[in-house]
Image 1: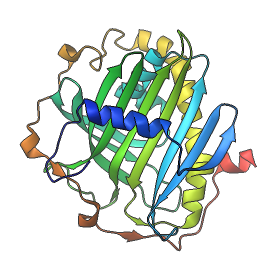
Image 2: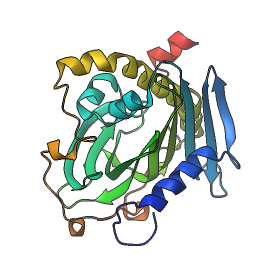
Image 3: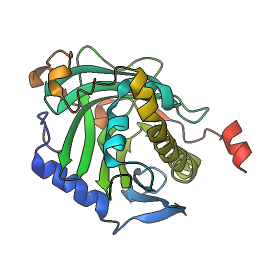
Length: 266
């Protein structure tokens, strides 16, 4: 997203995001197993200090595109299946298909945990669905002392339907984690953390129908905007979150601590 004003993405923005998800030219394949691929792209010259874009693509032969869309939207369900989430909540709505929210997540130890404030928008496109976001500033939610405020330059999901119980999920992330990260973090993200996160989404989809039946089954404000109880936020309250206005944390010399999950997978 360019320019200084906070803009709600239009149809061209969604089409451009869809094209980016489908084009792998200039990307490096770092993981390819059983219907799940992970690709990375370096932005800038110095590999150790550059930003990295991450693209994950997963074929789900037992999940419908509609279910995948619901799971990625349902904030109450995310608190149940997303083991990385520390705190997540909606701040307010902008339009029927755009809102502002807060998300904080656990980073690989011993790195500091990160959080973001993002403008999120979504759009069904025929049999496909897109959810995407970018970072904004909100006066009531400044950076926290115990968190590193990261910047989503553009992050999102493309869900493509291939039939009643078959879809492909593409996750595209261009995030500035705010800090000089050691090389092992980049490698670990693409070769272990990203595939693991994608598999968790797939498993969450299989259990969603049963869970939703017990948790306000008719409530889906992403499909039925009249259901939302969020306050409306004027765009004038928001501003673009520039990466260079935030503190850089140098974690480039931090050593890796292997988790139990990784020991089990070795």
